[in-house]
Length: 100
Image (cartoon, rainbow, N blue to C red; front, top):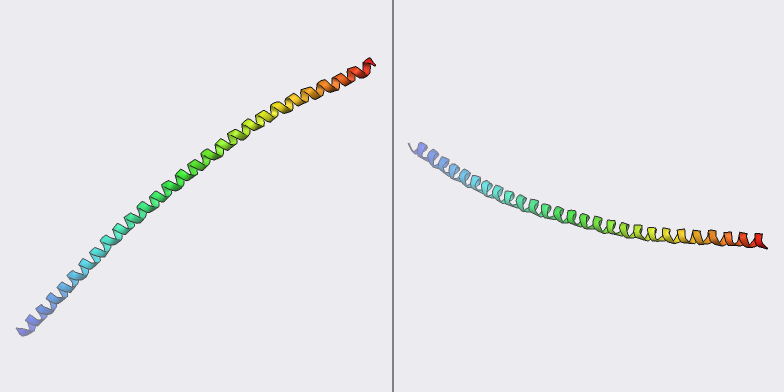
């Protein structure tokens, strides 16, 4: 009988130890899940920030391109005017040579 009681006591101790270990594992698992969620939220926030930065950079880039297009169009007008003036000047010299 004493042998059975000692075995029961050992089993109770083992069960208590196992319950404690399971409780520890569950606690650690809960902590891991919470840390994983926090890390994922930080990663999501970082990605949102990077995407917003990229959008801002694209807006700035396209604004600069628009300004360059306007400047090129302005230069085209000046080149056209200079070409017309040059043609008129050459025509005037040709007329002056024929009239002499």
